[in-house]
Image (cartoon, rainbow, N blue to C red; front, side, top):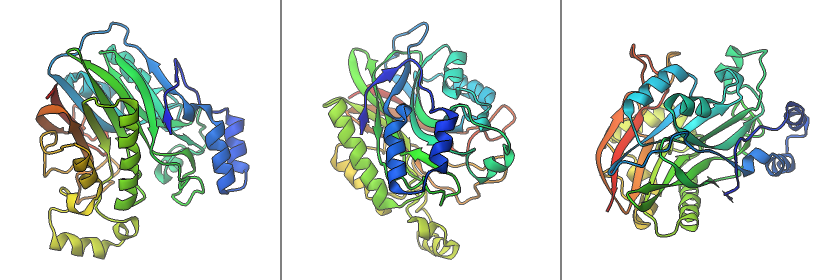
Length: 351
């Protein structure tokens, strides 16, 4: 499902429409109906920068799973200091009680004097995960949207959304929260010294395993080639490359035994994740655009998640010369975590 329709402002379904979906029978037909009916799932919000600037050559690009952008002021400070030409982001809230019912990416872009692109991954039917349900009990979502996108002072062209799956696995509440939608990769083109480069900001399913990640990769790469055939590409994403199936991850003894046999497995999961072989065969490289052997997870102020940490966030490049790859701490001025993911950055030029 490749979405290319753009709007100035996307909005979630009305509260009574979300409530009707909650009250409906939990079955595949109800999910399919809501997926088709909720307009925000079929459009991309695009807002040009107020004072556009040309992209530097080479360009500095960053990817970050911003974990709702709930620490907005600290995130603004950290990303301003990073001084990237384009920020590729995922886990962004729009009209969620847990983040003050703000339009987080628009607020971030406004503070940085930048434009933004946003696409809806999920319409949230509740307040979030179990922690957030407890923290925000009695509150209400205005729009109830969660998604990904880009922030940039450089104009980005031809924004689009690639919906990587429509399994509906979050609809029945088995993972303790109900959602309509599916995982996404946001796409946009960057003019890099007169050469168009396709950027993709991806967020893969967390409650699944390597084979499903492979399927999501097939969809993403096919949509990239459909939307921007022949262009150099930089993909950044939270790929959740745990190297384990979901049931295996929940078995602490199994994980401990596997890590004892292969201590670097979590930060170098390539042999256990067939998506890497597919990416290689489709012309993508990751060696030069990642700080290899480093985890990209971080413990939040509430003490979760706990180590051991893996490298689950990645950059992949095709047709680009990459340098100065870095994994940067996602912390505020006092060293406190502002996300459970670190920030990835790389410098790119057309090969």
